[in-house]
Length: 273
Image 1: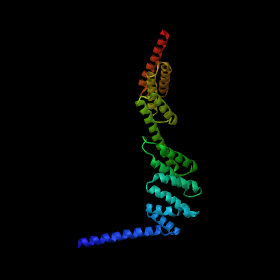
Image 2: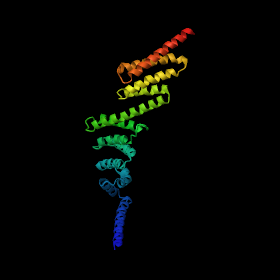
Image 3: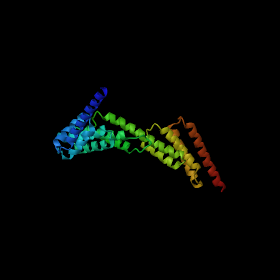
Image 4: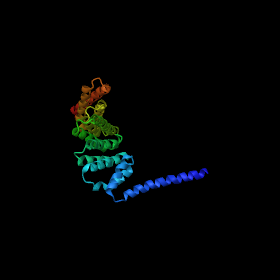
């Protein structure tokens, strides 16, 4: 008896699922744009974003003007966001912003375009194209909507993304240093300080710059040693000017002494030749 009840329940459930599917398929193939659009909104409001997106796809190109068009394109972009297809969400939110320039939804769409790129931002060790895109769009948002309540959040997320870019730049410079590619390390660290002068890693970066300059001098051909040791002294002085009692100051002073001694030794050799 129990098996019969279970079987009947399964049949009822299968029938209900089949009816739901049949209704959606009936709408999808109806050829009635008004019905399709109305049901796309209904599915969206119920959180059935895949069905809503499918129906919007059928009618968006046929909509011309009016609030229904704005709402449809806006909801369509959001279906991608809710389905965690953030790359397409960013694209459609940005397209909405550029198309419906007078829409009441424009501010939110501009923010969501930037935020979708923010969600695509990977760990700092990977490519940061989406991080840079998000920063650009958040900055554009604050310029377009300076009075928006979202400006504070945009600035917070910009700081977070810029910190990620700093971490990537530091990791790249450190990698060059560990690989003993000291010239590349110097260039990478100099670029980091130029782009992020307030970086919390600035003291360590300047320490590694001085070390890179010294080790580059040590591994240079004779003709380049003098200029590179002199550059090392300059880099050490730069560090000590900014961090006279910093955690690396003792090591920096020793590097400077070693570089100055190397310059004296080079001068002596020149006199004897």
